[in-house]
Amino acid sequence: MERAQTRKYEEYAYVLDFVVRGKSTTVRGRDGIIVTALGEERLTILELLAMPNSTFEIGERVYIGKEGRTKILSVLGRLEFRQTSSSAQSELVSVVEKIVIQNEQRFVDYLNNAQPLTPRIHALELIPGIGKTYMKTMLEEREKIKFTDFKNLQERVGLKEPAKQIAKRIIEEITGETRMNLFVRK
Figure 1 (cartoon, rainbow, N blue to C red):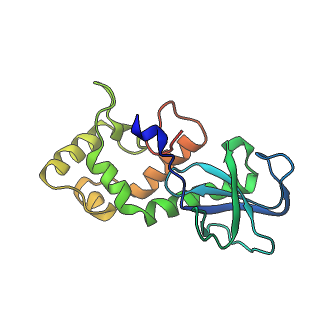
Figure 2 (cartoon, rainbow, N blue to C red):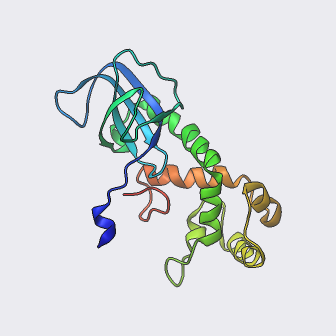
């Protein structure tokens, strides 16, 4: 029960889109610079209210933690993929890939420790590009020695562009195309 009490908040988010004179979708009556961003840790789409006169770049990593924010006034709430602008949706792929690459160790650790989900389905199989064959090879290889990075995984298993495959899975989870999430927190 301990875990339910400690709500984990995002520290950083990546800008997908922003509107200088926008109205909040999640909080009635809030307007100003409205930023749509993707949380780095939980990979959920957030609506942020920026400080007046702040400027943003698409793909920029902004601090949204509790103390000492410099550009963001408040985190207004979570957004569903379908509530985001078409430009936010089109930026999603590159921003997710950026997050996967910049947090490479976290995703390599996931691949090193992923377990079967049911007697018939392994978590690894849900990642695009990893079928039964790659999965078996990955399991055998990680038994010998854990993968150190994506390049190491690619060299030992032959899986092309692991970062892109993981990013693809994350996109499917964000857009709601999956029944089960591996990376995106509900």
